[in-house]
Image 1 (cartoon, rainbow, N blue to C red):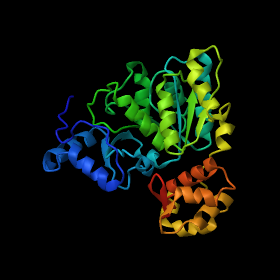
Image 2: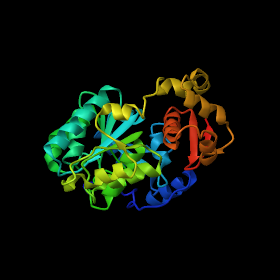
Image 3: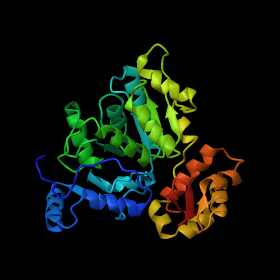
Length: 337
């Protein structure tokens, strides 16, 4: 590592139940007594355009707080405001086919034109195509190592474009090399940021299937593009469809399940009560009517809204959470903000 990052200790996977636990992990990973050195190092990175966002700051993406192992810190370079957009993940195999790459680029372009910010992992193959399809709009690359450690090097030109006009983030401090054990951690962040996950050409041992698993654990809808049954590159994505993922053939398949919020996030943050009263979506209004400032178990909410599918309710809840209208206290408890 070119810099000491002396106030950051190595990351480790810890199950976190609430923000108090997150702070304990933060204290374990950071030398909070050596604040002068910490401030100097953070200032050094700011001069390079790299910012450090703590989970207690308003700039921290609320979507990540759905994770049981919330990253205490996020390092970012580029358009940090993109973190508060509504995002769709597009991920898949590195050894992608011509048609897989074309489809990833086309659907990324279509969804970004509709207003979604595209999230992927800057790997070769499908990830690269997903970012390229959204270059005229907005895209976020989540890296396994530090934001200053590009991998693979063949994506150097794309990486520079993302730093200039889009956003690159990581939970690992600058200077961290992207080792094998960090890629699964990267995948959970891709999943948690997103309102939906599109899987394109995933083999049976693809890391994209892990991203889908993280998404399922968070109640995020999974979309999978079918492939030829003889092609090993699509065995995993075909399996997801068998297991209940939405069939992905075009952008409309995603838009039918996920809609962008009608009101800007900033307006909702300022006037959540008025937004609730103005809601014209029947399901959203029923959810708001069923909730109060007293915590309600999501299982009980699903029972009271049994005339809708579980998937519909969970997607609507996620959208309301992104709008700052509701707060998910943990994986099974929700309340009005």
